[in-house]
Image (cartoon, rainbow, N blue to C red; front, side):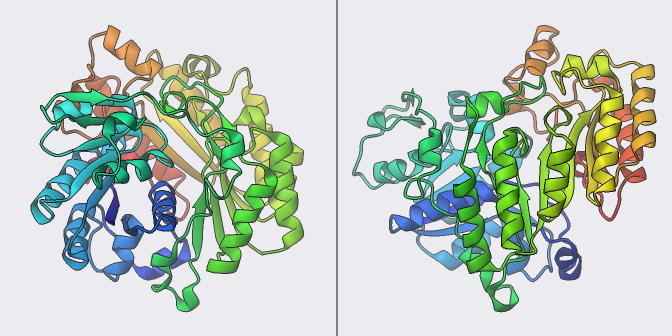
Length: 457
C-alpha cells in the first residue's frame, strides 16, 4: 500500500542551509517511527515533516506542509492512505493538508492521529466528517498497521481497537480503547523497531544525518495543570538502558549522527536508568552532542556531571515561574525552592552545559509581584536561552477544566475557532505576549524559538 504520513506544522521561514547545519534540526520522531513499522510490513511510505520539506526544496521556500503534501502527492502518483499527525495548535494547518489531500488524491483514505485527535476523539470526526475518514486514538504502533488492513478490506473496523470512524450509514463509531504498550513491548525491537531515516540521507554528504531525536520513555509521571500528556500516554513507561543504547548504536552506525536529542518529557526521572545510559555513552566515546529536557526536582549534581562527561551540551528545565506559590498552582517542581533551583542552574553552567529554561506568564492568579520574582530569578541564574510562552489552555487539562468552569472556553472552540493558541485570559493577552517577547529576546542566545513569534507570523 502507498502511504503518505504528514506532520501538520506552522508555516514559517526556512532559514538558510548554513544556519540549519550550524545547529541542525532533527526529523520528526512519531511519524518516522510509524513509517518504519509500516515499511517492515511491506508498505511504501513517504514522510513529510518540516525538515524534509526544507531539504527537498533546497531551503528555497517557506515551510508549508500543505504545499509539500500537494507536491509529494503529484510525485507519488497513486496513494492509498494519507495520515496526518495533529497537535491542538496545528489543527487548522491539518485541515489545509486534508483539503489538499482531498483535492489531489480524491480516492485516498485520510487518517488523522496525534495528540489533538487523542484528546478530542469522536468530536473531531463529527466536526470534520468531510475531511477525515478514520481517527487513530492513542499509540499508533499496532493500530495504524491494523487500520491499513481495514482500508485494504482484510479486517473489519469494528474489530480494530483504538479507532474512530464513519459507518456505512454515516454514524460515528468508536471502538474499544487499545491498551498502551508495556515496558516489555517497548524493549522488543520486533514490536518497536529502531526508527529508520533513510529518506533524509540523500540530502547529506555521505548519508550522514547530522541530528536525530529519540523518545526513550512514553508518558510523564507528573501532572502539570497545563499539560495533557497524562491523558495522552496514560502511564509512564521507559525502555531499558540496553535498548536505548542499542538504538543509539544503530543511529551512529547507519547515519553517523553528531547530535542526539532526548525528547522524553523528563529524561532524568529514573535516575538509575539515566546514569546507566550516560555511562554507556561515555564508554562508547562517540563524540555525540546530547540535548535533553528535565525538571529541577529530579536531578542532582552527580547526574549533571555524568551528563556532561557523556557529551551533554544542553539541558532544558521547565521552570515556568520564579514564584513558589505559582509553581504549586501549576503542579510543577514540588517543593523545590528558588535556592535549590539556583544551585542546579549554577551546577549545569559550571559543567559547561547550556542552560535552557521554559517560562510561563499569565497563569491564573499570577500577580505583578510573581512576575518580578520570575524576572529576578532569571537575572540571578542567567540562562543561556529562555523559551517563554503565555499560559495557553489545551483541551482536557486541569487548566482547561478551570477555564471551562469560568466559561472562558468550551471543547467546541477547538473545532470552530481558527486561532492557533487559546490564552487563559484573552483580555491580558497582548500584555503577556509583550512580556514573553521581551524576556525571550533578552535570553535568546543564538536562536529565538517562541510560540509568540509563531502567533505573530
